[in-house]
Image (cartoon, rainbow, N blue to C red; front, side, top):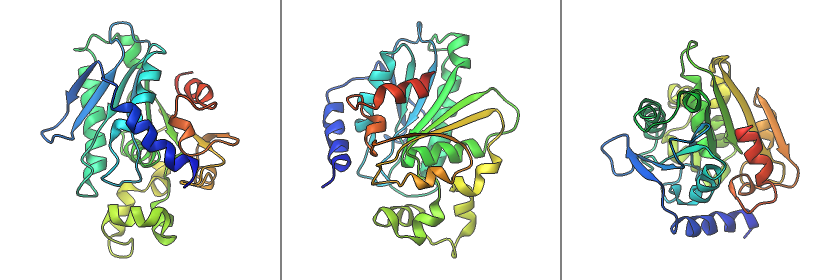
Length: 254
């Protein structure tokens, strides 16, 4: 078993001991909630984070709690999104869209300053990176500026299915092959929709070149700015104990 596949469960175990500042429900399902970390009154920015797990139902947001707490200690407000992990598409993208909309609507009521509301960063790891890229591609051209920071994102669902990558995770999530429902893929696939991301969204991917889960080549061919972290694996980009994490934090918040 490689180091990165071990580290995610370790982060999940650590996350079970961490409590958010509060929770906010954005839907009626028990899994439609965000965990909020940090002090709304003093936050300098707002980060919405979507966890990964290769679309598999078994992986919840617990492994992202150490990241959320560490970012919050840097003085930002972090809203970590949970979503319905059973049922496949389109539930995940629908939930991420609803969660981000709900968080942005609630920020004034939570006491977040206008400056911190305007300083909005949206990030996601692995499948979460795929989801936030897809979300951004459905935004209208007009609106506030957003910094989008995918971490080791899945960017090409068609290639994932064609290559049977991730033990068939994408095909299981989509439920059909592209030949049977291309429209569904064209709604979700970041690579197919990259040109539709509005100019007001500043996209910058962060990916380790030693990633054995989502090959860095996917980020290299995605038409957006990127930073490669030499020697970093799939877990390093979300692990506060990783030697790469200070650089990841600076790229997220700087």
